[in-house]
Length: 426
Ligand code: ADP
Image (cartoon, rainbow, N blue to C red; front, side, top):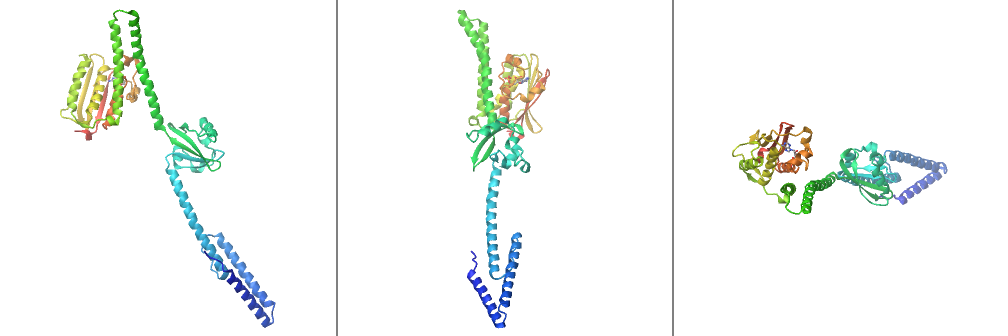
């Protein structure tokens, strides 16, 4: 650290004054010579004070050249200035690190003051909430998230710490979970996390429970009704009642089987590893089952490219193709035609199931693979479908890197094409 050498400077001044007095006495101008000396000394001080003032105004320049006491002062200030610059650089680095860290956070993060005015926000807030750094800083957060539930939640966050699920102000498909943390005196950190996936999963779980209960309710009600009649009548039960009960029990059984199949397919741990699957042999087997199901009411044609094999999980592929063939028969009136082809087309491996049955309205096609989705309820109740078949098909195709293409015309028929990439050829 630089130190001003006061002793030296005062000694120099005292020597100067003594010399001036001596010269004054010797020359006979005892007042004039020291007076001139002091005036010159004062002028030097004023001159250097002005240089100091000017230099401090242009902080970036090198210190002015000087000597004696002023050289020490300039050097001392220059050293302080250097130290200061180093410290500011370090602080800036800390601030930059913090800002990049905060920007890298996947959650939208905002700092608001006691009046709920936004003081700072990170990059995720810009993307998720479409905030604009120059415009939205200084705005009340409730002006940007205009959900009354959010305003209400924010007003109680001082007393209780809860989270709130809200819809993203810019995108109705995104669900955000808001949480608040109090820091410093009156500031709060608002964190908005994208929980769309969790939210959707939760909704799917609730829908599944509701759908399964709904599906089981009808057959169970019918069964209970017949059982109560049989119990009240006593004696031999009506064979027709038994037949109807059997039908409902089979419906419930089919539903549970499909549900178990879906859950098995979705459970990665229970998945068999892929092997070379002899699709022609599998389809030949399915052709026999299709004849049994149709009981001679349909014209069923299988066109299979011999030797065209696939790498995949045999049980899953069979389940998918069986669902498509069964649907074609179920939804094609007697005397109709069902055609199944298995061949290589433009490098892809394609299994197409085509019928000239009742067809599907265009608007329903995109939703067919949703669980429990059916085209018109009455129609399917008669066929005894579970509404899960195409969901199974889609799942199997996904796990085999394949896609499902559906084309259909109401009253003319449908075609379901499973398209496997050439890499799957075995
Ligand atoms: P389901 O067990 O009810 O047949 P799916 O998931 O297999 O359930 O099929 C969903 C719906 O798609 C069916 O309810 C039916 O309305 C329609 N569908 C499927 N395949 C055909 C087809 N080949 N022809 C006409 N409609 C079909």
